[in-house]
Amino acid sequence: MSPSLYVHIPFCLKRCAYCDFVSSIYNPEKETAYIEALKNEIQSLKISSPLISLYIGGGTPTALSTDSLSDLIAHIFKNIQFVKDAEATIEANPGTLDKKKLEIVRHAGINRVSLGVQSFNDNELASLGRLHTSKEAKDAVYLIKGAGFENFGIDLIYGVPSQDSRSWEETLNTAVSLKPKHISSYELTLEDDTLLYEYVKNGKMKLPSEEEIINMYNYAIDYLKAEGFIHYEISNFAMPGYSCRHNLNYWDRGEYYGAGVGAVSFIKGKRFRNTPDIKDYINTVRNGDSPVVEAEDITEDKALVEAIFLGLRKAEGINLEYFSKTYKKDILGLYSKEINELLNEGLIVIEGNKLKLTRKGLLLSNEVFTMFM
Ligand code: SF4
Image (tube, rainbow, N blue to C red; front, side, top):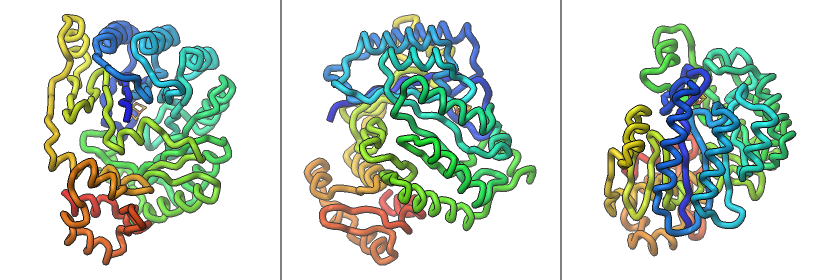
């Protein structure tokens, strides 16, 4: 399997209340220094075979100026070889897009946009601390389509304060009416050290109940399937042929290179992590040194566990034959006790050569993963 490349842009126009990603507020001076460092790091990557995908994520990559973005993308395609028809995604957020920026990005070689919408309900957007309204999110979709992108996705979050089943259904309905090729639907995770965590802890905001959250997830699965989407991963849905190849490579434990602050690479069984500090990243790369601050050998045991829980994330599950060839282990024998228990509880199922989560298992996936760890 060919590797992929992730490029991290750590800037946003505003910090969302639930965010714990490596990102800071956009500032043009930092942008120039960061892009220079990033270009140097990309140039120094020793990549031996053509890559299957590029993913420019963040942060908010489209918070960058049009000039910086086009410069960066041109640099990537000049220095790195990709397979023909490689998937090239950029993450975008409403409020950071215009027609010219999108057209330039598309002409530079990006063929897929992943738009962070989260909700089409203005109260929910406000409680998440998002920069934009529902109307601005729809306008962003029209801009993306108008710029000629046929492959775009919408990211949504459920389990948001003040959200109920009705508003979630309306959000999904609006998303589908905009005809994206891909929809991600993630349950809100309350991370420590975020504003939202404080609000919920202090009783200023209240999350929906567990039962409501389960209903929202179930509704998303049934509704999106009925609308023609394939539920190909726990939180991801795509029209046929539009699953995200970049993320599939990750779930298949394919190799990937990561460039930028906090970026992670996984090459030849080792995982490398870049410094999460922007200043440190810029200075280190400027001095010609490597920004990697952590290197981890993935032992056989770790690889095995990773392959199980990443494989089970996919709707098609784990291919048992491929698994035993790759990891030289018989998963059914190795975990016979756990697997029997999970089968009895109706959380997993074995279909032919595949071991996969049931609907109940999808809802309780964390409990299933814990059994293998
Ligand atoms: S746009 Fe994304 S990365 Fe930026 S602050 Fe919001 S959640 Fe975090």
